[in-house]
Amino acid sequence: MDRRRRRVSEHLRTRRGRLQTRGATGWRDWNPYRSKLAAWLRASGREWPLAPDARVLYLGAAEGTTVAHVGDLCPQGRVAAVEISPTAMAELLPVAERYRNLLPVLADAHFPARYAPQAKGCDFLYQDVAQRDQLDIFRRNWDTYRPRQGLLMLKAPGIRGGAPQAVLDEAETELRAAFATVERSDISRWAKGHAAFWVEG
Image 1 (cartoon, rainbow, N blue to C red):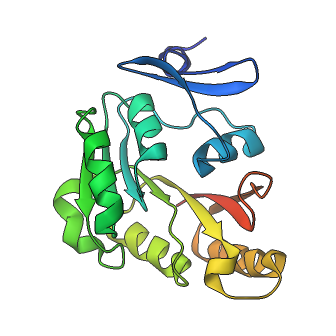
Image 2 (tube, rainbow, N blue to C red):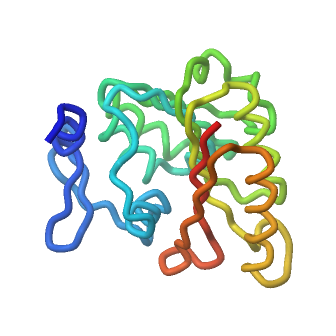
């Protein structure tokens, strides 16, 4: 096992069929029904892609369920956790207090320049928001910060009505026109009407 994989394995494992991450309080389950990022790991078959010192821009942090696991997996890195809802932020703040590497940001992801102090230099963009213009938000943040890689959790019903498959197919076409690499994973088993898109350059 190479050094990077060994460092990742210190913080991520599968036990009895369950994903787990390790933080300051020990190992804890990572439920794919509560975290689309965990669902993507299950669906894609990929290894955890980020180094322990990765700098992550996380859009749609909500109450911090998934953000906390990212914090576990990037202990020497930085996670700028952007959330628009003051109610959700009130629940995210106590989570962030337990992690030195989490930076909670109350902001609208439509305006990426507003959180430049926290997000500058990020090498990975993660997005899980439900707005109709999800694709535009993702591209706007990508163009602002130019990360190396990104992962977009796309909610078909959030974009428009109609058959989710058709909505997701259309979104994939748009992404392929904008990015050099696009890999689509079906996570609807865990999150109805959703697909995950891994993108590069």
